[in-house]
Image 1 (cartoon, rainbow, N blue to C red):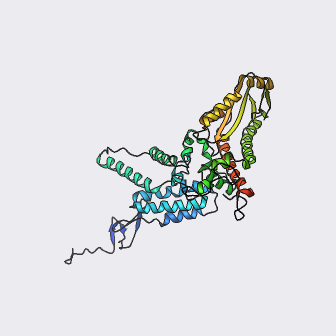
Image 2: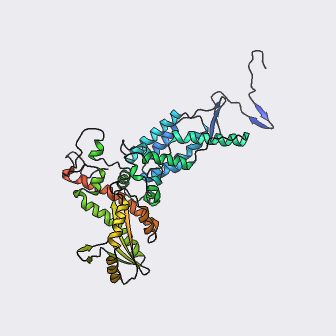
Image 3: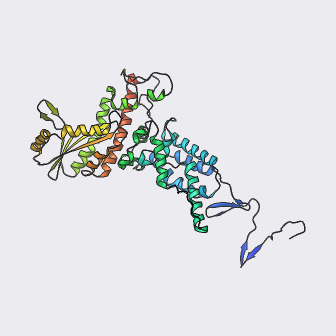
Length: 416
């Protein structure tokens, strides 16, 4: 040690025949994916993460493929460095803000859509994006807890937050909002939201954007645009009801033809699959009874059993839940007189009623989905959910194309 108290490190050092370079004050090196300096762990920078996200979200990929790449490739590639590097919560929040901004611009999601929709799991009706400000500290704490237990045998009494619990918290946050409360039953039938993570690249971009906006209930109606403020909320076509998404898509007389088209598109899925399998299919068969006239959507004969399939795209409101629609269908077409007529028509000795009930946001009723899965594969239900949300977006576009629904300065195609 010199007299002035300074340690002089030799320029060259060799240990067992291996040259060890001398580190300068500004030199950095990577070890196990983490950057170090002569003074310790290098503070993290969020510029690279934000740049990667923006490059992806502003690319020419389809919207759903952008989400898949963000969830499965871009964000997981940074988790290791985010957990081991000293990233402050403030920096993580800034990354979350940048990611949310890029997603909203790329998918054209309204600014008033809750952030919980972006972070909720796909099975619960969200987009499944990771929230770094909450996930990274929890992952870091879990890693330190496991290391402390392995090195020192110290058991932490605090229970570890599992992946399932984190997903449940994000889902509860989304379902607690006004836009997400109708998605509470999404996890019961996974086919309801499977289309969010399945994209063949053939669907037009505008249809996907409309489907996402329909699923998150982000359609810009008068009631939504004036939420919290004074303004006109009545239907633009002269209806006495408030102009809500449910009114436009489900009840407004102007969109009746578009609703019929959406209904027929869903029915075509079941009839087309049955025809490819060689089953007997009868569409909209008129059944005349005493004082009534019934017309079920489909009658499919398979393995000496006649199935009555009647599709209903409804809303899951508290005043009119999906279960009531299901029971009404069962009472209507499950009557003994109706079954006798169908037995005589098809020559079968067994008739089963299978109501196909789902909401205009693509959610299947659990009882209905279980009955349909005995007749058709699961991917038919997935396609039906996608066609339903596509059709709901088309209904909104048809509503805006009406001359009475828009001002002269508004786009005629009903941009979504």
